[in-house]
Every structure is written in structure tokens, then in C-alpha cells.
Image (cartoon, rainbow, N blue to C red; front, side, top):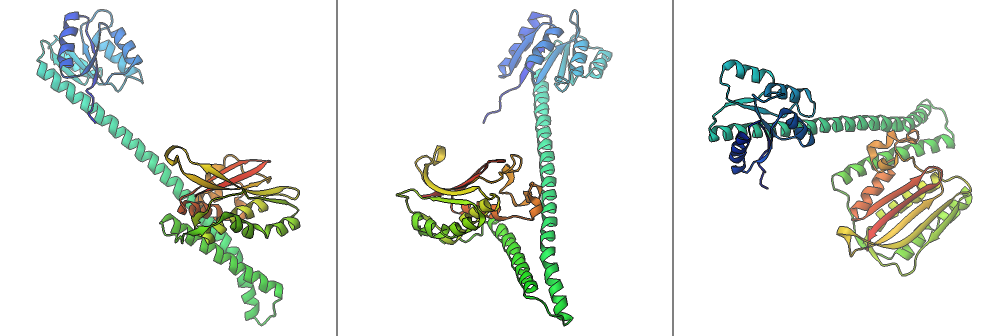
Length: 377
């Protein structure tokens, strides 16, 4: 892309000088605005800041030095470079020009080539300075983001260690009793076994998160008929609903198209979402799984998706937590973080993405949540 020439504001009370200087600059494709006074220069610059100001010294009312000082006192204009153009050739005049903030000084009568070289230098210098500032700001933003990520990972690691320590303590107590020759009850052994299972689950989830982030999730695609798959997978939840005092509804639309996917991994996606719905829905509430067909839009226009929605009337997710529910390192910042590290939704999102699908979440505190998985048909 061609870089446009600079936007230059020239200030001189002599119309002939404005015409001459403007013609020289326009011949080199510079965008030029011309004003006859310092006050008008300030007004024009505030309305649309130029890249460079070329300023005459001897003007009635506000002279060039006063105009330059006014530019430098205005936070919106202070960084605009100013080149003085004047018939005054005394070194003291030039010193004063630099003292009030001028970047350069050209003596009249000027050489067109000299003016163009000085203008080009100041415009390029200003652009490089702005580019450097943008890069510095981007670097500062990146460093801040990196610091935030490191803090999140530290918090996550702390929570993970806490979650591992509790089951390890149980196992350690049981082993200590066995080593001392004391008998242990079946309940103690059951707790030790459950603790081992909890540790294995946490480690497996961490490994799965790592594999998903490095693109190493193995997916074995096969053809899946949604109707029998969902009916079989979700049938046990009727019994769970009865014991939990929760109404469970399964609404499978007729004529659903087959999809390609790894059924074992899609089982995990749906089971995790339904388990969460039961976990956070109180007695007397309801959990509903429904299906449908959605058509893509935009870049996905013409595509069809199987929609699997898990809707509950549970406590809902706070609006501040909702954007981070699929981020494993944000788990410790959520309002329910006291329940420990929960990597289920992070894994669900990655499994859905591995199927070239997407997952959406809607929720309102006190009313419930709706998680919808879209899988390509």
C-alpha cells in the first residue's frame, strides 16, 4: 500500500508566500492547508492535527514564536513538529525559534529543494516516532497480558496443588495405619480408593488440556445417528433425576441428520454438560436436553449444524464469570472456585473444537443456564 504524503499546515500573513510554499509542497503531493495567522493555525490544528506546521515568524498579533509556544502548551498539539520559515537570519532569531520548541529553521528566500528535504525529514521522523510509540504501547500491553497470564497460572497451580493435597492426605493416613499394624475399616479404604481416583482424574484432565492446546487430541471419526445415540446415553439420567428431585426432559427432534464424530469423546461432552446441569440445579428444578438443526451464516453460510442444548433452571453463572468459563486458568477466579479446579468445561470446549464445532453459553443468575453444542452435519 502506498504511504500518503504528509498533511502540512502552513502559516504566513503574506498570501504570496502561502501560494508559493503551497505550490512547492503540492507538487510533491503533500496535502496542504494554509492560514494567515497564528490564531487560525491553532484553530485549524485543533480541528484536524497536521503532521507538520511550517510557521512564519513575523506576523501581526500573535507572531510565530508566540504561536509555537501556544502549540507546545496544548497537550493535543505539543508533539506536532514545527519548522520556522523567516526572512530573519540572525543567529539569535534561530536560537529563540529552537527555544520555543521549533524543530527546524529555513531562511527566506528559500530553496524549494531545501524545503522539501527538511519537510520530508520531519514528516518521516514524526511517523517513525509515532510507530515507535505504538510498538512500545503494544509491548507494554503484551507484558501486562503476560503478567496476567502468569498470575492466573500461578493461582491455578496453587489450586491444583490444594486439590491434590487433600486426597493424598487421606491416602497417607490409611497407609500410616496399615504400616502401624492397625486395621482399617472398609469406609477408610473406600475413601483412599476415591482419593486415588480423584488424583487420576485431575492428572488425566491436565494431560488432556495440554494435548488439546498442542493439537494432539486423537479423534476417530465415525458416522453417528443422533437419535439412538442420545436416547441410549441419556436414559440413566431419568433415575438420577428421580433421586435428585429434579425433572429431566429429553426432546429429540425427528429426522435428525447423521454426523461424523468420535462418539466416545462426544459422550464425554454431553455427559459433562448434563452432569453440571444436575450439579447446579436444586430440588424442584428441571434439566432439559433438546436437539435441533441450525444453518450457518457469514463464512459458514450453506452449512448445517446439529444443535445439542442442555438447559437447566439452576443458580446460573454470574455475568462476570461467563466469558471465562472455558478458560482452564481462570477457574480460580470464578465465584465457585472454592469447589476446586474444574477443567471439565475447558476440555468440553476443546473436544467440540476438535470436531470443527462450536459451543455457546447463556446464563442468568437465579434463572439457569443454556449450553448449546453445534456439530457439523
